[in-house]
Image 1 (tube, rainbow, N blue to C red):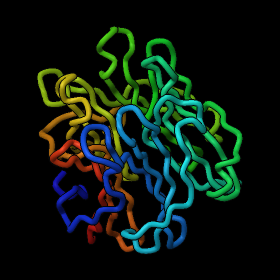
Image 2 (tube, one colour):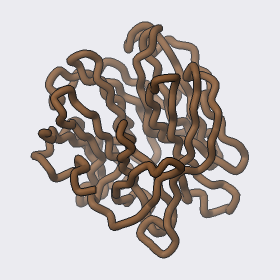
Image 3 (cartoon, rainbow, N blue to C red):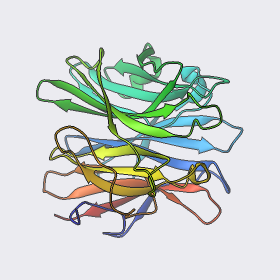
Image 4 (cartoon, rainbow, N blue to C red):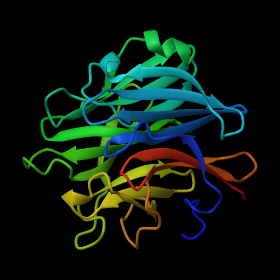
Length: 282
């Protein structure tokens, strides 16, 4: 799938620098939507291992320079940490899904808020969209409008083996209204004996069925995921081939002219991460 828009295809621009130096000073986990001529970008900032995560919403007219609209600290959701958000335009305005860590556990759930404007999301009622369960942590949603409703791809961390909670796969869900979801099971998992065997997480899904995922081979590679590409075969995605980019959380936004803008979380030499973007021509 050599035509997939991947990092390195164009000149990268730093959207948001790392918030500090060293492990877990991370900016990334992006999710982008196009609202007319404006790009609306959600991302996560982790301000070090013992501080506060933030969910940031920013807007841009050119894709490279962003104005921050809203910053929601993890305490806003009652979470111990937060991870990748998802955004969608709705008839009522804007809907935001936030990945939330249940305090003092390995469990994650996905909260949802809706408001007429991006700014008003700060005052919106918080409900749980995807709760997970005792054996499953859910986070890092990809959520799309479809012709007859909504589709979601959810990263699931497996909690049934103590000490191995970093294992992950991706499940699929659908909804008629974007509030109540029907689960359809696992659609991507790591391939035994390969670079993805510890777990595989979908990070973007295009309308033609092409997709990107990041994955790792071992527990030691947690936070060192690499990115590969796959395609929907009608039933599931397959983790195959080799990693094609040493980045996490690749997001791809198709543009009206047939090109793409991509975002990804890039690791620096000191293990901090910065958020980068590239404009890839048709």
